Image 1 (tube, one colour):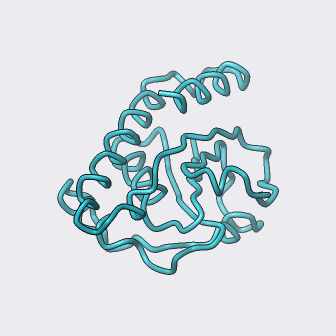
Image 2: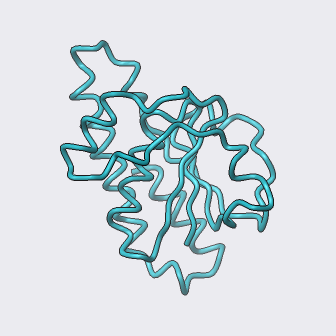
Image 3: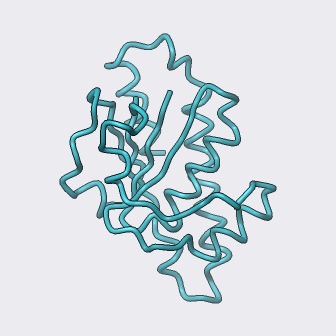
Length: 157
């Protein structure tokens, strides 16, 4: 299952969910992240948090969603938005008509700098819980309608 996680800046929330899914997906899920207007860098607090969780941060970068809309890009099975801005934007047409879900999370980078470690930890906890609910599903054998319903439900938790 290839999953594209979208956010406007691709520096915090989408990066975190990509890392969680790749670490915990046990080969069942392969995640990528991108933004409609990428920040050009991963937020330093994202990097600190991921490093503290033992996740390799060496290859992480802020990317445009255009990288995943071309013919050379991996085919996506699912596209998940994690910020309200990206959810409301007109996204590129993804080959194969992947399932879409919105799992909105407050932007931890918008917190005052002294509050950012706690804000990033809270975003991590929410995204991690949602990722684990997805990974607990037998998504390989679920029909599209059932999986779509589960993705919507997970996004409300």
